Image 1 (cartoon, rainbow, N blue to C red):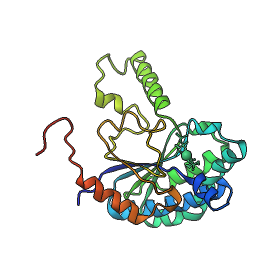
Image 2 (cartoon, protein in one colour):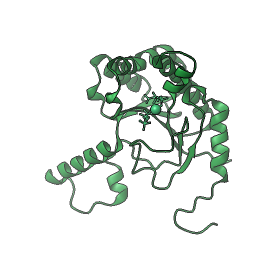
Image 3 (cartoon, rainbow, N blue to C red):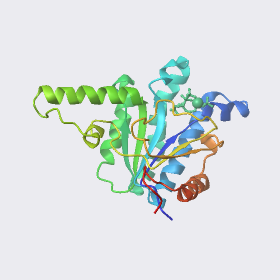
Amino acid sequence: MQIPSTVAIIMDGNGRWAKKRGLPRTAGHKKGADTIRDIGLAANDIGIKKLILYAFSTENWKRPEDEVGYLCKLPGIFFDRYMKELMENNIRVTFAGELEKFPEETQKVIQKAVNLSQNNTGLNLCLAINYGSRREIVLGIQKYAQDIKEQKRNNDLTEDEFQQYLFVPEDIDLMIRTSGEVRLSNFLLWQVAYSEFIFTPVPWPDFDRQCLIDCIKEYNERDRRFGGLSS
Ligand code: IPE
Ligand code: IPE
Ligand code: MG
């Protein structure tokens, strides 16, 4: 079986999962964090190189204050509980997005996990937090403009070179969205140019190792032509 090297997941449906059980939305986020642990370990075992998980979008600030507050606390809860296990499994934690907007404490726990795991050589578990793809592209253009100004570059930018200015500089092989919505919600717009997409009705808190394996099986049935012809 061909293992996709870079997989991205839009972890959607925490709120609906909780509502269905008569629980507050935050209970769905808490269970969703346990799923991050399960799927991170599974992706590492399977041999995926980079797993990018959409955890908080630039648009999610619009949610009620108490929900945003809980989501800011979640990285702390998650790493307290699971960092040891991630380290034992050689998993490297990274992030994509503008961390600066989060409370100091949230920034600190994320930075600590990144530093602690920076030499690990297993899965790169990348959390997209305060991430928005349009913002990422605009920031990339600003950085490029700055490099021109400082005469580090001239005016001959290629597609591959521009991609290096993004938070996520890789192409995505497989993009998964849980919980039934069929949209990208401002996630990795540049990087999905030739991705395979899978939209599953399973809400994120119920997405398990077998669901990930099923997605990879489906990915293997796709004929990726990249504009050429089947081989
Ligand atoms: C995804 O679940 C988690 C975040 C966006 C932070 P939702 O909170 O969007 O859950 P639904 O879509 O309302 O069910
Ligand atoms: C996308 O989910 C963002 C994350 C999963 C973090 P949303 O629930 O915010 O997206 P919409 O509002 O349904 O498009
Ligand atoms: Mg949602």
